[in-house]
Image (cartoon, rainbow, N blue to C red; front, side, top):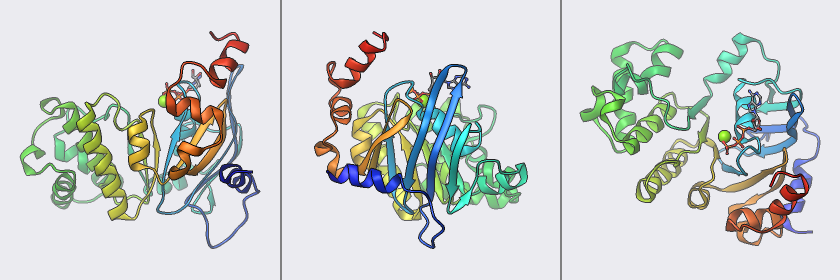
Length: 278
Ligand SMILES: Nc1ncnc2c1ncn2[C@@H]1O[C@H](COP(=O)(O)OP(=O)(O)OP(=O)(O)O)[C@@H](O)[C@H]1O
Ligand SMILES: [Mg+2]
């Protein structure tokens, strides 16, 4: 039995109350849309202050899983523990409190076009925490500096910035409220390789400096190797492998091997043929 299998077995154990709670623990999470069984019992553990990257093919359920964690989609079954607290079925009030622990970098940036850059960064502080605008302004500038931008861009609008700069602003916004857990959805998609690397470095540095816990979804293997402490692969609605990033190239899992090598032939392709998908 390799290290990956052992770890997966540990993850499959029933959650118990302990002082050493993982920051995030998904257990048996299921979600079906019509006849499409997207999540078929997701078991995933994310230790505190670690950076976990989830990889998996297009349509494998990565975004649905993230939306379940954020409470945007309610799972049909299973539990999602955040710092030991069950979050499935929370009241709106409790959910809003929980959201204060979260920071989110959306795919494509998702900045508000009609707000200035500093107002975008300060949005969660002003709207979520009712911070005074003048105070929020100073936090926003500090966060913009942390991502290599500064006062110069504060009064500009998103359309006046390049894609790479917009991503930096999105990152500044994601960290503005000092979140305990930060979610990154495809943070480098659409960026040139150099800017992608800059963003990867920024993610690594900011998460480390803040002592935050991070969950990243990506197809970008460069990103995986740069930002991950641990890697998990989702396939057919389940986490089929999870281990330290150092073990990625010796996973002993042929599905992981095909995915990380981007090979046209392998078990993923064989399954797709059997299922009549190709
Ligand atoms: N709100 C919804 N209603 C119905 N089906 C949905 C909904 N959201 C997602 N799905 C379906 O769930 C499946 C998984 O979608 P998801 O967006 O999670 O994939 P993904 O792994 O994020 O893919 P990608 O890498 O392309 O972003 C897809 O078949 C999708 O059509
Ligand atoms: Mg997605």
